[in-house]
Image 1: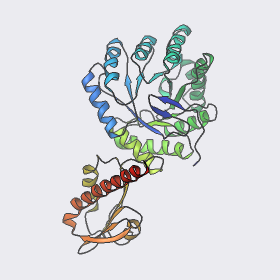
Image 2: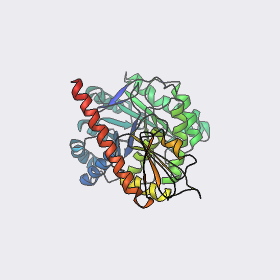
Image 3: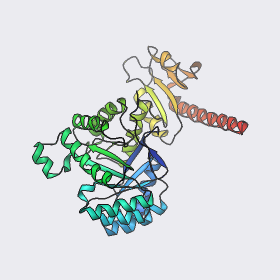
Length: 365
């Protein structure tokens, strides 16, 4: 795939756009004034792989809390602002790494100028967020219902405000809950601006349905080379959003984090319980951040072929299963010992690879 050429901006120390890796985001759902709970969720999101986290700042109490949260957070924070430009100014004073606003709903021109000027002075980018569920009334009347042209017109009107103020350090999202509408809208706007695009299917649904919608919509755009950062919007634990985001990027070989399991869906040919084995392995190895390909195949039909192309593989057989190491048959193991054995092999492999890499770096130095 050929990636769309976009302008690079920085959200804290995370580059977005240009040739930067596609970053993964989520948003806290704690009450922002509950500083401890919000920080705890931010840390969990960071541990799961979040590059950037968004925090809502709807009022002064939340703004006061944001000061404290920002000081303790190790991951860049986007302050989510709607309507009240004073909350944007407060978040800027608190050294937010990005401000999420729609310039058109901040208020009169002097208020917009004040926010943009503060962002300029502090080197803080803006995220413009257009959503099919909150289109301006004039566009609802003009188009009758949300469509791609309406979303693009809304986006360009907000962008025009920023560009009149000579502010180009922004990224844009143009989301809908409808997959086809989202895809069409991003494809249209991608040809009209050079700024980074933040991808998402808004209000995608619960964990299962939302994951499917997001994978289809974002996958189509990413395969087009469109997208510089993404958020999976799920009615679920925000940590799930990070995991799904990484899974989408990993499946397209755009980024990699953690273990890439190649596992058969299982059938009557399997010689060990593939489903139970995978459930246990995924649960036990959630802490692994290093890249590793592992094949878990229940029989000899596809097992040898898949195992020859991974770091660690298992092919189901009777009476014992065959373990592959670095693509070569190595030894056999009983099914009852398989999960513990595979976990140990994986952790030993990661430890050895890390040690080898450290030795190479030391020699180069």
